[in-house]
Length: 282
Image (cartoon, rainbow, N blue to C red):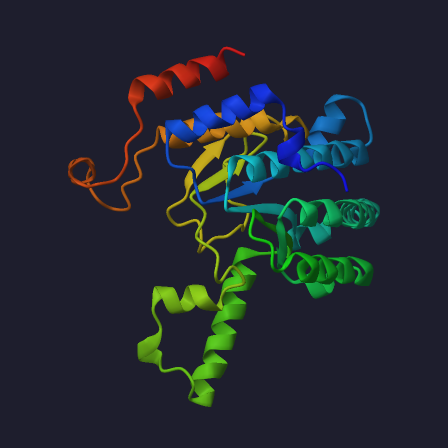
């Protein structure tokens, strides 16, 4: 059996993660819009597939880092419904790379306590990919570490509309009363049911839009937008996003004065600033 991610983690990275844990409360759920694979390849006069292949290396590193530092949930926007409109050859390559990633990684994810899930209209994916996703979910179902969710053939609007259709059917059957429909009830009908809402939403490549991703769930997520293209985004970039997150004031509609009067833990500002100076000096 291969050594676990914790066993092979470099000592300096362990120290960095320890300092980050002291800097503030970790987000329970991080969602990422992985953008910029094509541009990364074009900038280097490479075929677009080279960007997607390098993007997989970023996925590997971010999943490992999130698991090692103790993040509860990581959700990656891997393929949107709109992505089906891309050139057929590129879609075929993306599906081949997805299948390759799953075949290579499921066992390692399992051995490191990761629970694998997927959300989206997955019946639109190739049968071989559907089979691997089912097998991966079954194999890792009882794991208690990081929950890694792949958003595949996913659309936030589609999921909300699908949830409304199911709720309407339940009302027709008499198993749900309109008076019982609350925000919590709606959340329970979404594919993300059972997961905490994202605390931190990261988007790479500098674009400033949600792109139909987790529209309901990200209502109060802190957004972190970086100019780094996804193939260049690695664990130190994740750490920078966490430092930025620790510096945010999450009010959820309250005032700053109310937060100061509450029992919410606050980061020690000087310590946090020293960490930020260290990372951004690199």
